[in-house]
Length: 243
Image 1 (cartoon, rainbow, N blue to C red):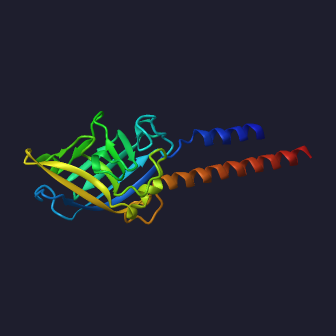
Image 2 (cartoon, helix red, strand yellow; image 1 turned 30 degrees about the vertical axis):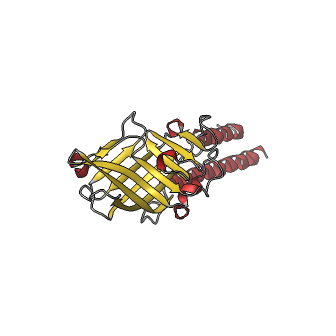
Image 3 (cartoon, rainbow, N blue to C red; image 1 turned 180 degrees about the vertical axis):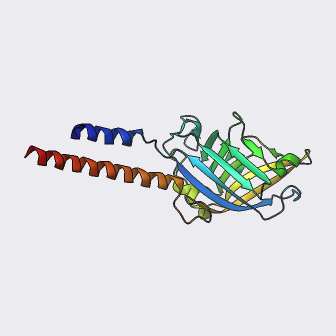
């Protein structure tokens, strides 16, 4: 029969065996062309939904300076990823290899100011499907296809050394927060699109139930409580037998 020490060790081992959960954030919005692009591939106001998963414990690299830092979410547990669903089967984009740059009063690729942008690394390549992708494919590269937060002038970030998820959840403080990408209309002419976030939170759009991460934590707490109650019952039973 197991001893209290053995049961306590089992509880601890169970808790340690549960993987750390990364943060998943869900967003929605509408896609619109950026002038002077014609609206051929995606009609103005086309809705989109998506999610971004990242490990908030990933540290910045030691490259660059305190104005701009890179964060490699491929090293996270689990690795970072983001996905976007545009229209009803028009474009479905999934990137399983994700990096991020945070810029304070820099924003070289986006016109200066404070900028946070998540990209999809080209290796392994992102998965893009849908009827729009077959006719007018998204022009992918890790500078042009991004989740983007931008603010001019740089009045949000103190520097680029510390990333906070609070900055990406609070979309109202940015001049623009959303997806930025291009497509090849008719396989030739590039069209530039942006889709501003209207919602961005840890709760899936329209959902009234906790996200999967919260459900996992609830199940873990219930399991640990049951194990603790079993330990208490065992100790009391042994005490009665001893007397």
